[in-house]
Image (cartoon, rainbow, N blue to C red; front, side, top):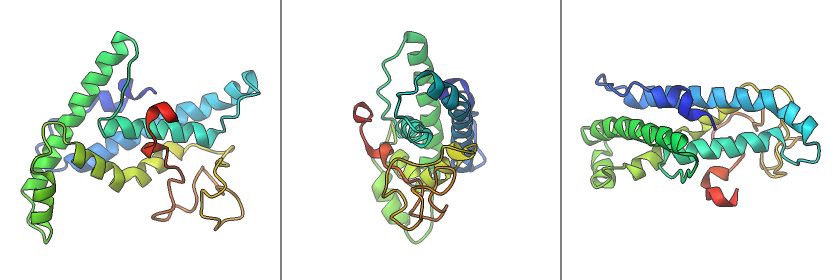
Length: 197
């Protein structure tokens, strides 16, 4: 996963304009888009070399999508080489800065649900794990669209029930069901522990 040397590692976390949540979504979607482009480009040569591999493109993208989710939610148990580990640490620190700004905005909120939000997130520092989880849940559909936007072929997802049986194909195009709420992404790998994927 090349998130560390793309957008997310170099995020500008000095967002004092109240748009941290929008900027974070943009950064994560751009990183997902680059990751999807890279995986899509190298998938066919990989399949030619390793013809007995059962990994379909949508499955590969779903696993990478889940890795992005782990990183955003602060759950990434990456144990790679020291340089990668340092990059992941820097990335997580940048994400914490974003979520700190979002947390500050939430704690200043004045809508109908302000008390509920303040109660949910009052003890959510220094890692902001509840906020990160909620942010991921609210934005996972957009991130799935970003990681799959470059898919032209090989878009059949492995799960027969991926689109709830509402389409004649498993996933009709771009590893997606219909781009409607609650149908995409057609994967729950992002809720499966990394060691089980």
